[in-house]
Image (cartoon, rainbow, N blue to C red):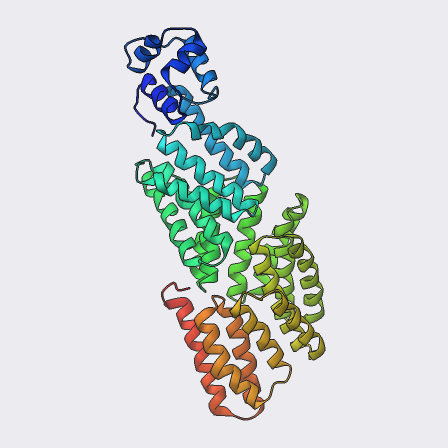
Amino acid sequence: MFSNFSLGKKIKLIRSAKGISQENIAQALKCNQSTIQRIEQGKSECGAETLAAIKKYLEIENAPLLGHELEIFKERLLAWGDLISNQRIAEAKAAHTELQVITHLPYEHDLLVMFLSIEALMLIVESNLTAAKESLNAAKALLNDTTNDRASYTFHVGKGSYHFAKTDNPKGALKHFLCAEAYKSKGIKPSASVYTNIASLYVVANKPHLALNMVASAEVASGDNPSPLSRINTYIMYSSCHIALREYEKAKHYINIALTSATSINFEAAIGWSLAGLGLCASKTGNYQEGITLFDQALVYFRKDNSLLALSRAKITLYHKGLTFFLMKNMTECQATAEEGLQISEDDAPAQMCFGLLKHLTTLDNNSADYIFNDVIPYLKATLHNKEIILDILMLLEQHYKNKRNKTKANAIAAEMRDIYHKMFFGEVEF
């Protein structure tokens, strides 16, 4: 995993990268330039005191140059990644300050790829996606120079996490997480978060049965004593799968476990998601007012979070809130919620279409129903990952046409729903 350069060669590479001459070091150490030259050429031993003095002058006192130091440094990188996974950001930032000394060792490609990829994960947690992309680009530039599986695995986790957080490329996110998961065949144990992220993306791709398999793998990867965050993420994903399968009682069971754990550690993002999930379960089972209350509670948490993921969740929650008002026949509040959704969806055409659709529902007649079925539904099928939203609307349209005794159109909508369900369980993974 580590470079096989001699100590003298490493010193030369670091010195050259910093634009420092042998003479500069010799003057600082009060020795002859030939002494430094012989050390770099491997013709003279570099004693502990001399090495410490050279490292101090080069400002790399904590840099790992020797074999045992490199092994320790690798373990510190992995521990740093665990801090980030467990949302211990203050500790992760302190570790980052110490570990970035590796950037002064341009020849340690494997460790640099690991450092830059894990740095990207920290930046993603901080919602600094621009800086995360820069770190990943720097890691990618070094990737061809590494043959180490751990470094490549870490890069794929970082790249998948970036696409996941950015929310605009689920296909790319799934590709990288699946690449990371494949390293289990090479002896690397994927983290529980890799499996839960794959599961989340399968839910987005309307493959809840595939997602359930990944959540089960996440639970195994978490071990017998999972961290609170790992436990929360696992149960949130179990509930997401059961919501997609319209098994709302099972979903509520898992959400309540996740909510209790999230509340105990004040994990606000998970609290918000759990409340939104409970609101959806309540709405889907006819407890509309309870659903509205829970949606409002969830939105409080989403609005405090400036991340793109929180904004996406806020949009989905507002949509379900508006649809619940429609089911309550409260068209005034449905309209108001649709307007609120439109205001936060200026650059999101599919979301705008969904909130516009809510407004059409408030004045549902044959003309608006035909428009929704002939124009809105095809657009949403082409642009919207979440087919559950489409299924909900199709069910409403089917009931509308049944009430109007239009059997032909009701049957056409039923056929459309069957096609969606068939693709969910038997079709390819698509976004």
